Length: 346
Ligand SMILES: *Cc1c(COP(=O)(O)O)cnc(C)c1O
Image 1 (cartoon, helix red, strand yellow):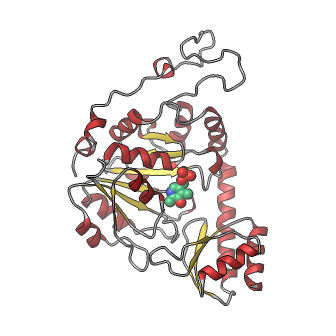
Image 2 (cartoon, helix red, strand yellow; image 1 turned 180 degrees about the horizontal axis):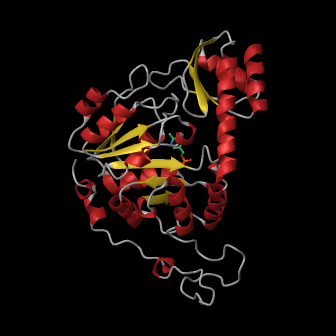
């Protein structure tokens, strides 16, 4: 592959990052220091100081849990901020392109439009796997990022490891593996290959398995070189103090998180079984995540009927390869039972 520096936009290469007061003097933990450097209000209320711009405590805990070096971690205001930083660092507006594999997560395409980047879509196969030949035939010198979502949203399946490995070897730009649902998956994270592939970028999030969608914390793992570039362009205080505190608490509750994941997976399997008895459901797709994609007789009709009964699901019928499909998030036992009851009634 090309070197990372060859992939970076010219203006980013020469950028001199903003240096915040707290970047220059980090050791806020030292109690007898007097901080008169950042124009803060001096009266303590728990959040009167700017947060750590490098989130070192959170990164330290994450590094231990995930068995990576903290220099390979960047945190974002949700994965969405991380994805946006990747565009801004590597994709030259009105010139470069990205490759996406629909049906998949909608943000890649939205961010491409927002950043004036061409989105070259290469459909998954009918069994929702990437089509290597078609992808490689679509790539050119300006293809900077390939987005691989595994487990994939909305199909719910994981991609074959061999296929992903081939793409990592053959694609000349960055391969971003979006692992938002990895904690539900039978497959292992690609984190173990971080040192093997300099073009590998992995994103994860606290929004799904960790149950913290409200605090907005996304995680990016990549080579030190890539992390450094993203660090240079991120807003200095992108992770607020309350988010850092909440994230720390939750990350340290390993058993609590594991227990919830186990429960959700159990409930997902129960739900999949119960769905089989609904006459208008034509197909229940295999899921490696915390949601199930189903094919029905008439997605718009069934979607509206559920709304009328007070249940909101996601209608995916307009997505390629997803005609008449609905995506159901696994809820609590009670919620899932209500869903099944309503599905039987309509
Ligand atoms: C839910 C989801 C995310 C999470 O994004 P956040 O901004 O971290 O909440 C990322 N990628 C995919 C594929 C998702 O489904």
